[in-house]
Image (cartoon, rainbow, N blue to C red; front, side, top):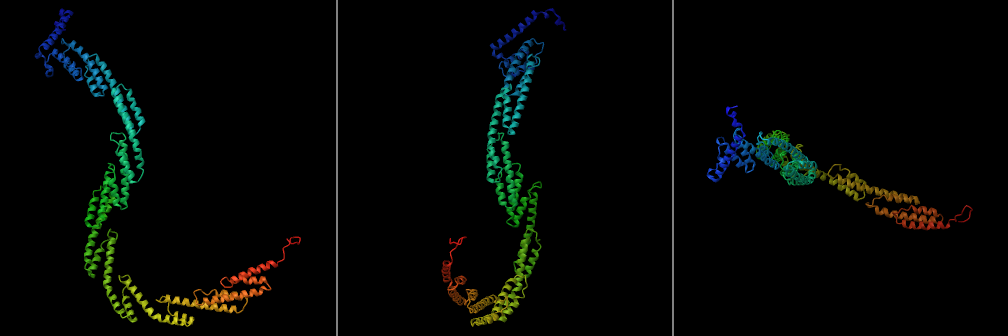
Length: 607
């Protein structure tokens, strides 16, 4: 211990009382001096703390603390924290620091309750660990941390439940905030979560219809679902679900557009693609589909420039795209088509002269295009056309020679014309029309040869010699120009012969005069066709023979009614005697009924 501290008066309370009174009096005097002399008031903001006296720092600290705000109280604490322990003002400083610490804690508590946790903790930690309030601060900081951690956990849990559309569970967790010892979490944040739950529930109800709509494959329904989903605010917890619905619609519309594209309906594919909503999940593939559809729209024009444009469009499709293989196939086909078009253009320019040599060269050029190439069918078609053109040029002299020979209208001239056209080989361009003309000329020759024969047969038939007419007509062979006409006439004459035979046979039967013979005669005459000239004669004979049968029946009726009835019953309906026979039958039947003995019972008595 220093010697001066061992002095007796140092240990006297009277000494320290005098010192304390002196310091207090000095501070009072300083304060009064400052009050009475404003020019002497120190400028605390511009004070350089390391070079300032303890009394001045205490004064400035009190001045700052008097404002009772956290920044000012912390400023006051910072001003006096370096006052030496043996400084005469130390006890006064400690007393103020204790008071300021409690005030800082009270204000920090308010900041904490207002939700400014970090600011509250930062302020509370300004309380020095040398004051008795430090333990209270430490305890309070622990409570704050525990409560705040729990509140943050509840908030995160509620939001996760909201993201999972579990509205009831989310609200139950939000209610837990009201039991926390923090005004900010128990009121403001609770109400915020409660409002979020209500908004999310309402928005999710709006999305129910959209969920039903996306089950359809109708474009209008899918776009309606997108329209409803776009109305959900980005701050709503249903926003994620709304975006999922939009993404689902985008995928469905991409599939529908792809189906159209696979069916070579690039117009339909583009129409759907242009209506497809924006979605990161399908953005790249949608653009690839549009590029491929636009490429097809250019390719259908079938010009070299348009095909090259189509190729450039599909080259933007990357190798990792599902449409890459398809785009490469199209590009390969279009490249071949460009080459084929160039060859076809050259071939057509050669064929334009129409000479056999140039046409042959054009054919050779076009035959370089393989059949399986995109323009293979077109090349084969023009080759066929040019070959027909060559064959036409080569065979036209035969046609011209045939026309010259046939012009004199003689059989010899026509036969010479046929010989000329027969030189045109099967399969050549003029073969079919030449064969048609040969067929026509051949028919003309045959008609010239066969007409006299048929006319002679007609003359014989007109004289009644049908058999001779048939024999003459049959000289016209089958397959000749007049064979159908000959067959018709022969058939007619054969029918007339048969009719005559039937009439003759009927007459021979009728000569017997019996009912049975007369019936057979009627049946034979009935076989004469109605179109036959002998039909009227046959009908007259039938009526005559029917009348004879009725006369026989009437004659028989005088002695045998039953026999008369049986004869009358077989008189054919087609004869004129039929009705009279039916009346006679009715009369004879009545006479029979009247002459029959009365019926008797088992005892032999009349009923």
